[in-house]
Length: 411
Image (cartoon, rainbow, N blue to C red; front, side):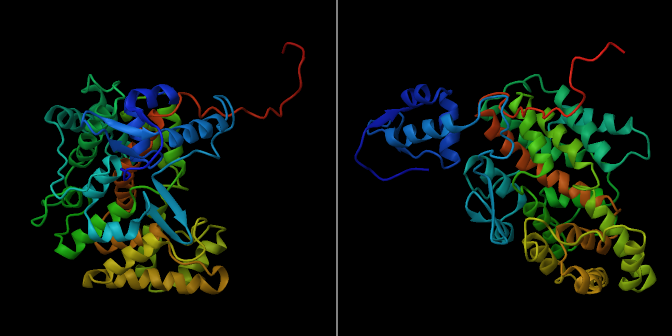
């Protein structure tokens, strides 16, 4: 981010880093997050920074709770804003981004600020071979989450530079880990004949159905829409790991572990099974009634951060409406919304939209969780990059003890 010439004292990169108490590389991380503006030095040898902006950033830093304080409720981030039923990546409408650019392009832009047309992620042969061996060693009933965690660990041990937390090193990990997560998964269908990006490669790992261009575009859209969503539980876990200076593979592993819960990444699988039952029985009302009678929440409805419809679901449903084969699954999802509208007034969320896509393409129930995890890895890396630029171990809340008061006799 650069500013036009302005009056006032300027600081060099070295002076700015010293004033903030950070490394010079962290200064440029503040620039990429919009917290500082820079200007090229007239002699062309470096950048200069507005001293007033630097002092304002110093004052904000002083207001942050010290390490060991309760900071989890006030983590500054320049990645995602959720406001008035819309969400934005670095100030740009995330749905519009997903509708105009591919997943890899948006991920690269989120990490670096550069939007390029020629982005292509490649899995290193050694990491990919190690990841595939790890998957082969797992039991046949292993879940998608089990496989992705195994891939992440296997890829990490082939990387001797994984403990380098410099920005360029972390970006290198991001560009190779995402394709390794995809390419290491066992193929269940033939490779897509159109496109060669992450979406096309992932499709063959999710279903044996041959995709058309509209179906691949819907999967790519889903990946792009799911890159980040502020401080979700898995993202917070990633930031805590990064705060402890865990390497990026370990930080992603923390996110994958949290994502495995039924209240987070696995929610689309529950919605998939519900839609399958609706199609089998021909009645959304009967299926919804069974859920309520059993005391279960109807999956795929509402989101606590949106008062109206989840914008991610709205965009993905619109893309699925352009695919004739998705018609029955889409009708089932709309029937579930209608059956619950009188009681809950809630619209379908992105989990229901993901389930609609997975049912329409004859994917397994856990396919939505796989899509979610692969997509969100890009956002986790973005948050890890932010956290590596903050003081270490700052995300260490203090417990509020409510057990027996000491002293007590030895048991």
